[in-house]
Every structure is written in C-alpha cells, then in structure tokens.
Image (cartoon, rainbow, N blue to C red; front, side, top):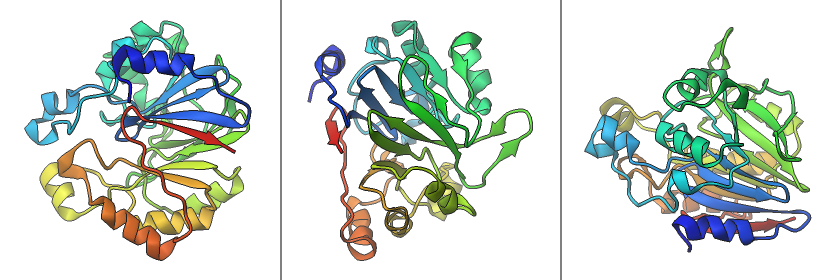
Length: 282
C-alpha cells in the first residue's frame, strides 16, 4: 500500500467512474473518500497527539499512512465531534495549510478548536443543520448530518448537537459515517427515514467499565448491536471502525465476526487497513 506522497499521488491518479466511490482507510474512524469531483477526509487522526497530551497508554499502534502536511488534495475535511481521535488539531491544522481551498464541516462544538488551535478561518467553516441536506462546497456531494449519541444525544441551544454522523450521497453511492455512537432512542427510525447506505462505516470497539473508569475512554457499539443495526437498516456493506489505533481501547476482531455470524450472517463486512483502497461500485 502506498504511503506519504505516494498515497496522495495514488489518489490523484485514480479515476472514479460513475456509480462508484474510492474509500481509503486512514486508521481508527479516519477515511478519505474520492469522488468524481473532489476528495473528502473524515475524522483523520494522523499524529501522536493523544499520547503526547495524555500519556503512553495512548500511543499509536502504527504510523499514519500519510502526514497531514502531505494532504494537498483535500476538498473538504469533515469532523464528527471534538474528541482528538476525530478532531486531531495537528492534523486539521496541517491539512488547512496543505489544502488552502479546503472547507471544514463539523458540529458547532468544534468551532472554537477549529478557529483557535487549528487556525481555520471562519469563512472556511460550515456547521450543518441536523437533518437538512447540504451540498459539500466544491463538490456535487450531498451531506446530511445525523445526531449521534456518545453516550447521550447532547444538544446545546448555541452549539447544536454535539455528536454527528454524516450521510453522504455522491456519484450514485450513499455512504454513512456514524462518527462515535451507541444505539439511542429514535436513531434507527431516523436512519430508516433517509436513503439506505450502500456503505456504512460504524464504530465497533464496544464499551466496558474498565476502559471508562480507568482510561477515561467513551465506548461505542457492541458487536451484537452493530450486527443487529446492520441487519435492521439493510446496509449493503459494513466497514467496522474505531478498533485498531489504540491497543488499550480495542476488542478482538473475532468478537465482531462472531456477532455478525450469529446476528447477521449474510452481511458483507470489509476491514479497510490504513492506506488501503476500497473501491466500491454499486
């Protein structure tokens, strides 16, 4: 798999045909998506900022496939919430310089970090209204922000919903990136009211007392919940995420496979490695 500048060059050279999208793994819940008229990155964490600020228990398990300053081809940077493995300030600041025309889409809870530490100008920032589709600037992609719950579905009158997932309709393909979430009241009904995802990227690293109390980690979907959700929503392909970057905050991949084998045995699963291309054709 290409890395660094070769990774960017591979993306630039790839032709995206009708009814398809190129999905690149960046690690954790980080992905790059190339369509016919742009490149999106979502929740990219490409530095060791969490270990540097919170200690060695949060050391990365592997190097990033690309450095933030090498991402010179980004049309829009999407952030689902302000946790550093989703809004890495060093990654965002690097992308903002490397791709000076890129736009930044996030919940209102992220605005202060984007404007301050990341030095992203207000004119480049966009806060979507939950449930109201918008066109991602510079592309033909249509985005709908969906409230998530990590663990609660938090809302502030000034900032709006704290946690977002994004439904992206682009080039005849629909991708759902859930951000961080658990199943919460109204969640499934909301998903069913929107176009069904061809590819669903969901966080499946579970949750437990030890990680919550001893590490301060906020968890996500249990494997059995993820399998039920995939079957209930009718997704074509599921990409499990959030289960590789930090060894202290993962569960065995076999637990996910076992849950899907029992709860959704016909559900296609795809693990996308950091730097790997998954080319989806509908």
